[in-house]
Length: 215
Ligand code: ADP
Image 1 (cartoon, helix red, strand yellow):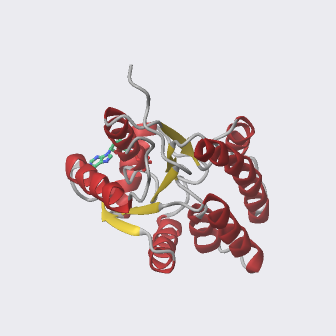
Image 2 (image 1 turned 90 degrees about the vertical axis):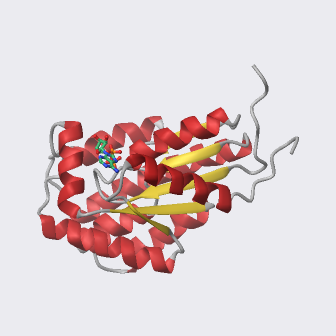
């Protein structure tokens, strides 16, 4: 097997959007596409992504009652472990495809739940500074369609997915505001999977400022 192509400093792509919008579907397709081209690709989920992160993910998605600020602190604990994993991937010259990133903390907890104060935003900014994604893609689709797709796919609604539709409207609005603020690329996900995948490949190709060894 030929050597995998490494990218100096790595390359991180974050996929964002509400549950069921099609993030994991596009991540899997992009992973196969890039691996087919010879790149070394890893996938990580923002809510998880490391052994301790995956354990805390279970806690986050459980129905255990807690105040909203507790969710924020659990997210931060997950994020700090994840940053370490991403740094290691960058050092190895890998492409990292992330199912969500620090934007989610803002979308779900600040815009969705309504946590107030500067602390949450400071954590979002700190996460973005540390992860520093080369490309962030926001997938947008009709909320009911996305939630139905997600529930059909997983068979049940988890702690966050079972919130009322207004919650997701606020989350979606938050994502749109952040797309502008943080130069996220918006993709209409109310389209066939293939069509979206072509746009994703184009965005990755255009956004690619990587220097591969041997290229
Ligand atoms: P997410 O990771 O954003 O929660 P998934 O990628 O798991 O979403 O997709 C949820 C469900 O919707 C899956 O069954 C998937 O096959 C389906 N799906 C994904 N993208 C589309 C699309 N563009 N059109 C129709 N169904 C889709």
